[in-house]
Length: 182
Image (cartoon, rainbow, N blue to C red; front, side, top):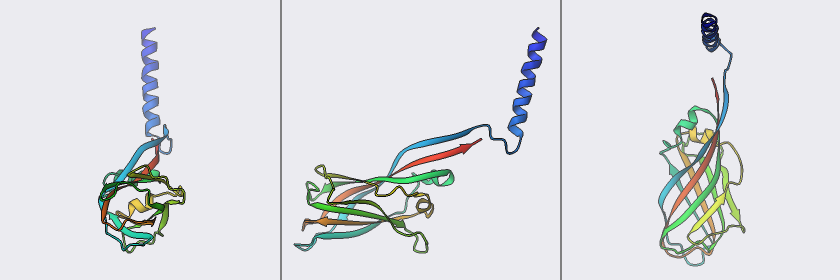
C-alpha cells in the first residue's frame, strides 16, 4: 500500500511540475489592490498677493517618483484619488477658499499627454481648519503620467486670498489595482 501511495504522490508532483512548464497555461490569476500612496510636496511657497486678488495660480513638479516607480512596471490601473493641502505657516485656516483646482500633466515638455483636471471643488470645498481635502474629479488612469517620470501640478485657488506669504504641504494621492498571472 505504501509503494502505491508513493507512486501516486510522485506522479502528482511530476504532473504538477509538468503543468508549470507548459507555455500559455496560467496557474494563477490574481488581482491586488495596493495601499494608497501619496506624493508629498512639502513647504510649497505661496507669495503675498495684492489686496483684493480673488485667485492664485502656481505650479510645481514632482521629479522624484521613486515611491510609485514599481507600479509603472506592472499591469496596473493607477488612479488619482484625492489631494490634501495643509497650511504650515503664515495662515491659520483655509476658510477663504471658495474653489480649488489641481491640474495634472506630464513634467516632460515633449510629452503628448494632455493636462487633466484631477482635483476640483467649486463652491463645495470643505476646509477643516488648516486642512483641505479634495476628492478626485475623474477616475482616469494615471499610469502614463507616472511613466513620464515627472508630474507637473498646476494649483488654482479662488476666494479671499490672504495678502501675506504662506506655506503649505500638498499631497497628491493615488490608488492602484494590479493584475498578476503566473
